[in-house]
Length: 336
Ligand code: SF4
Image (tube, rainbow, N blue to C red):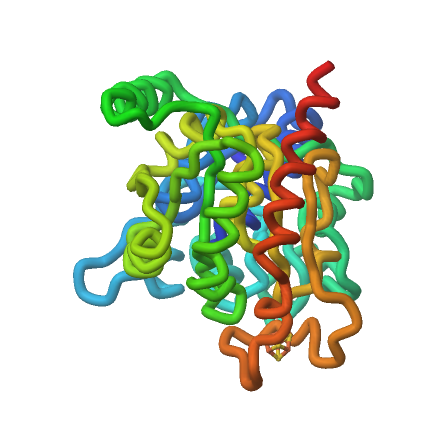
């Protein structure tokens, strides 16, 4: 029996995209122990899946937040791993694995880290879905579906939240709205337009809007909410998974929320701005993607728009409301 570590990526969307690889590793190594290593958020998100045996959250140090590569190496050493799959392409993750003395270290050769790996995969190269990029590490180009699971605790928390909302007339069917994006402001649809899109979507579909967001997106959500009031569900990822299951459609950016919804089979409307959809075009059956085509500067992958943010400003609230209705209809058709 070997202890196989999987160093998870940091962005939440990429963590979801790694779930097919985790399943493949479990299937192909039935005698071994699968150990996940990642941020506390990543571990929380993957709680409830039956594809791993142990999960170790990389602790944050009191003095400077994230662990340094040296500290991460010390942390990994205690896990006594025989092998590790490094999903982040960083030098530091490979350095930490080598410092921990893990005999087999598998990852893509980037950022001058090839000498730290014992098995080197080619650089990522052309855009393609991240779920495939990760599964290719074990030679699979047609990965299984991305997946997440709700937990009993999440279901209980969601039930309590819904019970607290009901006396105020806030009841399903819900339209979940996640206006934020951890990547940066270039991915965020302008606040006034978003408020109008939510108002029109509510009118068109009759769905009750509810806002979702990470703690650091509170200000953004308060601004949208000020223009179109609806509850802001400050939830942990554990609860968010269970609450999202109660929603008919998620309106979001090209963000982690989209991946969570896709993994839970909740239809999504995605507003693409500066990023290339080819990195995320998996699980499309219940997705309606809105993107301005033929914009010469797109995709720029810049965190802050250096020009007029035309890629997002030119998506109209009216077409977004149409898309919400389309996504809802898709879900109805697929459920028959
Ligand atoms: S440069 Fe173009 S693609 Fe990039 S954020 Fe601005 S408008 Fe969008």
